[in-house]
Image (tube, rainbow, N blue to C red):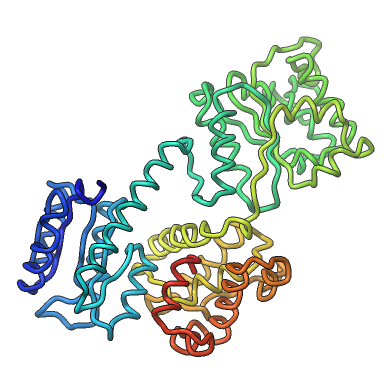
Length: 451
């Protein structure tokens, strides 16, 4: 049924290829459009809908390197990010086809093709696309800058969708660099307070003397340097959201003062006897282990209950799997533009090496690693050797971790592939030979495990 309702665009400068595919597909799909000139792709997609594009990788009159196909693939996906693209290539260009897969193509077909294989490939892609779209309809859609499509991030988005519209106080838990501030911002931006102030305070950095004056404000003359009245952060956030970062680092005395304000819903500026009512939504964050927060010698239990109506745990990057690829593309594109570099592509081993790293510094570490790679790389292809992990974050490489902790066959196979690819510096032919499988079989596994 999906195939029957599909609109397909075929682009190839060989008239015989266009005719053959048109005759094959016309009885099976809703519409088949053929095009010899790739320069017409942009204008066609502006005027017409296509569910899937079949794109040749080489065009006559140009050097047959396959780079033409990569160029047009990127143009298509930039114009229509949700479109599916199948690349057509000769066997000799299979490495380029895999490069295309890394840059967003859905699959590739080798010439000469078998009609049954063409139909199966198209059907599989369209079926998967329909399933993905139905899943997205069931996935909470929220306005956020957070990048992620892994299962663990889906759970975060589900909770965000439910909690954001309420006024419930939220405690965000997670390691340094996981993006707790983005979660806080997303809660505010998707709440009924989104048009009111969003005030962030790193309370862990405030000294005892600054804590009260910064949060609660002060009157002129309250202390030596108080030359004028100043609103505290609570009053500045009135009607909106107050985000207290590093809440786990405040002292017991500061906890008592904060608890009093939250219970009474009013603040008294230093040097004043008059209390000011406050109306805020409170969001707090910490990288402290919840077990430590449960220790009353370090954190008051009554304050925990007050700030933790709902908790959101932000997963570390090492648990987010395929999100590493999406985040890497985002940061590389961001820094390529910032430093006036041409768009980059990744060699096969580049993402594999990133996925083997534990990222103790999480997304923040990934961001800095990729910024450095963009700055230091001279060419337009990012390679494994362009990745340098900072000793500050105590990096470690995952080689036998999966096998040591899991007996799942997929996990063992994935770990073996990662280990051999790392050993052979991303060389697919050598890795396939060492693994005892064909290159095509290895390509299928790379796609399966999103390596």
